[in-house]
Length: 284
Ligand SMILES: C[S@@+](CC[C@H](N)C(=O)[O-])C[C@H]1O[C@@H](n2cnc3c(N)ncnc32)[C@H](O)[C@@H]1O
Image (cartoon, rainbow, N blue to C red; front, side):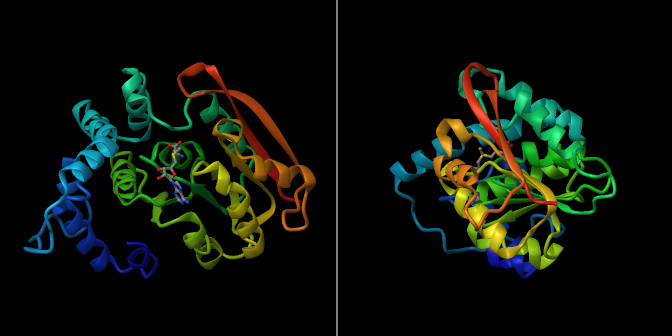
């Protein structure tokens, strides 16, 4: 999937989507499997789907149960357009504790907005996201970032990739929000490859705290971030990103920055749970 996307091979990507639509091991939510994309549902391959261990299937059902419910919920409320889709995600997540979504909503979303606003109005650089999940913050940034905003969101889970793309389409933001499949450390090189050195104006890290420092080092080595650009990392207190914070604090030669700041913010829909978001600005 990652290679097909990087090579811009839409035929191979569509083939994979069709395989996943029929797959017993990686079942897609019905609206997503039912077909988005240019080729439509088309004929499905006949073989190659072995029997699945029932324990493994139960694990997959559990793993994607909430995502499937979310896709169905958005369809049931008829949300179309960015504002409606973002609101539908938030209202789904507040439905019950079991529907809570690990997305950067509420105060965290406001902070992301402030960082997007801080970009110069003439800035043509791209926004990079590490971890798309269902596409909530990806769609929100594409929408709230204003005209010309382009978001590239890297996501390692194939089902999340397809769901985030589906949600970007019904949010009418797929022209501005691209979900790139693959582990962040494998696909981050696409940023300078497609947007040039210094072409990334804002990066939002929300994938795995224990990886933030490594991805930051890669961004630096690739010279992906532009002068004066900002990087914002979520969950730096909980679950935490100690090596990332240590690197910022000691300003190692590999991560030069003009300064950094952590904000104490409540976790999405969980006021009693303190978290931090940390921003670091690259030297102008
Ligand atoms: C907290 S969720 C992202 C939420 C999203 N930013 C939002 O606010 O709507 C984290 C996502 O990162 C993905 N992920 C975890 N490790 C990753 C990696 N190394 N590279 C890319 N994606 C990763 C997970 O599959 C998950 O979908």
